[in-house]
Image 1 (cartoon, rainbow, N blue to C red):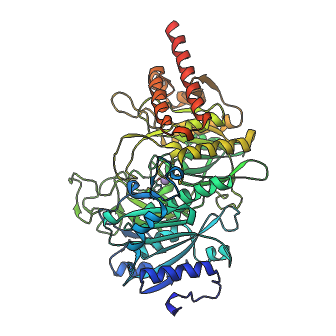
Image 2: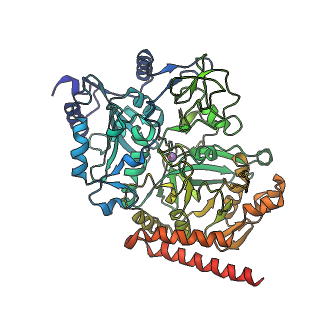
Image 3: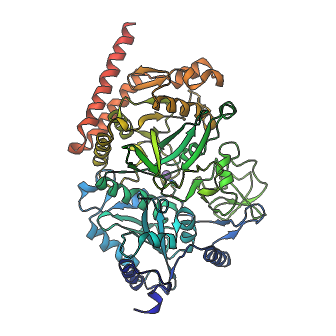
Length: 603
Ligand code: O2Y
Ligand code: MN
């Protein structure tokens, strides 16, 4: 073995890791191999190198200390779901919601792309830890990449370097992630998962979830497969903690499809009346939760990540001051607009600047009829910088979850909030979620699509098996399972105006959720589940017009009958694997709606 392949420091004795690094180095033909240690000195050196070669711009050190700006290739701006594959042993293992190719077949396509692809480049080996050090839930991953920009992002998003090698030890196993920038040709872009090899291979994209392999690829797609085998849950969920005026803490996990406001909800600033009364909201995570049973039989959650990869447009002092504070320093901004004084701007941040350079590198003024920042532009910021980060966010055993909230972006039909009748009903509610598509993934903006548990792009196995897993976990947890809810902040009137103010006012809904999870809170029964009374969600205090309040909590029988029939067709598409419990929940809902419709006709 040549010196370029060997790690210099003394503590790397994991032979499986060394062997894999040697194999990849030989295959990719990298000029040199660099093991990332995660130190300050290292990242300063890499950032400076990227400033010098034009990959990064150093931002104004007063306004954005130790922060940088990057532009991605114009064809590489979002996750690419149509080029993301689950290469499980059989099509049936991957299921109808994933792109599938047999492992051998995909290896025959993707392995040759890696041959010699790092010639003239440095190969970076990134040991990273998902989860708090010392947590029984934490897992080690190794990403090999030829992109220093990916290294810089991974250093913010994960606990990187020696801390991960220490957790790995000499014999430990790790998730493998092999990434190369390739030539960024979209035709050669592949994001492939091989669950049986605990391996991710990503080629020809440097963007976000396509390239930061600890995030969606490892912490969701591969982890969901592991979770199914081992009896836990890997979910696309934020985690937040609410403290009531008596000091009682309630932890809530919430699943929303991509770019539907998870970061905003995770960092919610309560209305003044709530703060004055003594309520507090704290963030544990904004995107991913791993949930396992604790010794007391309850579900406990950790945030496996170390940073936020937040959507920039729309983030402002008004909408999310905590996110803005999180990205004031030590942050990497990608595809936002760059101002002449080396500060940054995006749509929704505040008044437009007189001039800027847009995300494509072109001159921009407020008269330009295109956005200055890409709609999926991002900030990569350390979680510990969030002013409302919870003191429990790195708790090794996680936080006990009392409520699980599903949500979608729905212009009509779905009320502001309702509570499922049971864990089984809640699983059905999650399984049949639909939402309008956003800019987080390429294609189809605004289109309504099914996004079960907000996991459509992230579930690493057959979706119907995943629902069965949820039902099985519910059997295990019994009475101690969290209460399940569904919310919709996005209802509009006939003119297209939002009916609900959202943001901090969502606290009113959270308070009802907390009350219900504790067995209190006023509610009325409805065919779809329990609805709050208008008083229980503070409509009066908000001064909502009567018809707005009524629409927000309305269950229109005709709309819901159409919804349930469409759900029935969707569920039938899962064939024999569809759990009987899910099918029967749909039938039961149909019956309740029909009965309620008859009652209304007779009134
Ligand atoms: O990863 C990307 O390229 C953007 S999408 C994203 C980023 C952070 C958190 N969640 C998502 C998502 O798509 O759910
Ligand atoms: Mn996400």
